[in-house]
Length: 407
Image 1 (cartoon, rainbow, N blue to C red):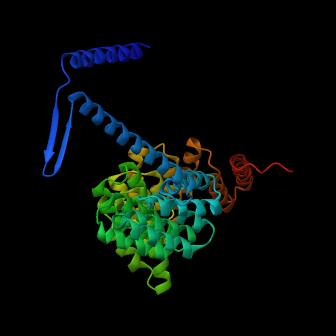
Image 2 (cartoon, rainbow, N blue to C red):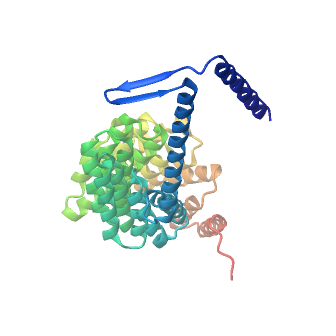
């Protein structure tokens, strides 16, 4: 409303100014150029200019209207192609998210051909083709994406490795990621993907090899990295023992793996337990006993004491004395007392073994301790007490491992 009033006011002022100008004089305009000569009054000349400007403006509007009309009428016009591309991209992305692979492949492929930045559409179409089992089309779409956007090599390669991994082609995924690691040595995502792949393949040596770079680049949180590192070394120790059995030399691969570990990991109770247990299974009980005794002198750990009591070192008397020395600080540890009872049995110290078993049961009614003391008492001829302990141990075991309810 206000704008209309202002416009009318301006028109009135302009007409007044023009009227005053005409009243004061008509003016004179002369344009002469070689043989051309134009003469008119000033106001006629200005009116002619105004008419020419209006004619030019109307012609532009007419041409624009005709162009829009032809674009609307022509199904292959740029306008229609752009609209089809937008529609295909919207539908394709929605279908991809909903798991409708076949229509998603069709629409995303169309959107990729229409869009000047087609990377995301090609990658989505490749995923859809991969889900449909059309691996050749999937790879071709990735190649097309790389051709259209060469600078997106890493993104295309990561997607390719992911799809190869989904197909079960772990070696192909490994080759793809290894090539990218050579071209981008410190890239966090390449390192993370390669770590996940090596863990899936069960290649503990490769995981261990990646750990220094993972820590340096801070790809994972420290706690997560420590867990992965422990799992990798655990698997490496078990693999070394297995390979040793296969090669007929059980101990050397195990020793080599153990020496490759840092001191912090050689002091880790869980890894130490695995190492000494593998030594025990390989018949190297004396070496396992020495390793555990040295570790327990530094740090007392009940899990290690449990295994220590099951070993027979080269000097069982010294082994027993070393364990009894720990009683000064851990006299109420039922695991240590049971271990001492077992070592006493090795020396046929029946009374001493019985006392240690009884002391262990005084701190913890463990079914294993009950069973071992029951066997000892049976050997000593105390049948009634032996049967009582067997029954008690069986009851404790059943209470800890309840039977499934009948159907």
